[in-house]
Length: 447
Image 1 (cartoon, rainbow, N blue to C red):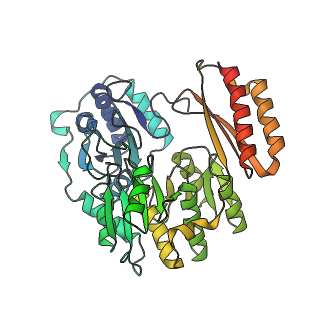
Image 2: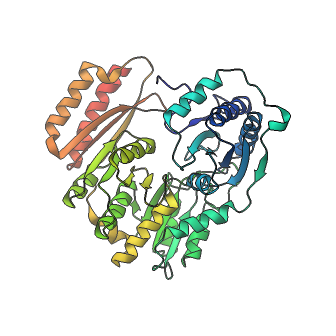
Image 3: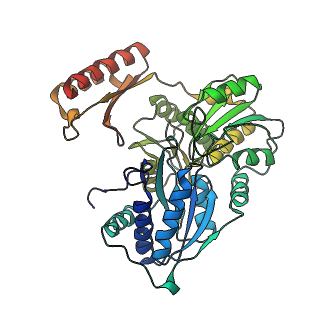
């Protein structure tokens, strides 16, 4: 299909006012998407957003472009990304649009699309939208313009959906849970889900002001929730990112439970209860300990490229249902069509209750291998530093030394001019040694 000009692995993202995240481009994007979707029979699109101040501006721009293309719009207001995927299906809309930059700071924003089945748009539709962006913008006749309506009960509908993924025979009564919503799109959702299921809830990160999303809170900044769990003597905590598709958890001792551990707990529970379909998909960054632990359970494991989009693609290809990333994107297609932090957290709590174990003990089912990630910045965007003889020799030397007890991964970042050097093994000293060795070679070659 060729290289995409605007769409990355998770929609279109950038700094507000620069790149493509400005009113002019987003209006044209709304129109282009509307034209392509209308040509495929679409009549209505839902738009949701996180809590960034720029969301108001971009929502209006998208609305204008879609209306000019003759598409009706349902406005959801601040809603988590997985909620928009769910509501797109339940409202029988042909597409859903999310205005969010996920875990990024407030000054970034982005646009991503969901199809009518709640999955991210197929590549061919994204390519068609990019092609339409090169065409001059037009407007349908006045009597064909799209109409916009605000959907006022969206939050309540999604709260009920989340509760419905939790086993009806179980209750959160007696559990004290800290929930960190990153001042993001779950601020009015996650605490209510947990309370309505019976938990005592301590909230942090639930006072968005448009500028504080992900600021020292949430799944990418865990200090606040660790302290809150210990201070309140809570049973556990979970931290969501700005758009609610990631989760990281904290046990009652203040230990962080990452995405690899969450995937393992969900998969082991599914296996124990006869709900496992095939195996588990991780990524190239998933800890080797996860692969080893699943192997001991007899569960197949496959690695995709980094990005929940690629995890989803491999799950669908294999017909499996459980996958995720160490960063906290967790997929369980029996419960949700996209990564959903709230739903993943509820699945872990259900496994706790069914096993009569606390989160600390439940998460101790496998040993995390020491892993070291070093980012090396480069300047020449056209140079393939990873193919350099010295880099390849350094990688080969490390792999020979580590053998089957470890692995080496070198890759370019998809968003920054960085080469990521990752080494992991069962020996922390060797992991550190070889990561530093390869990174130093990359630095010399790249600078």
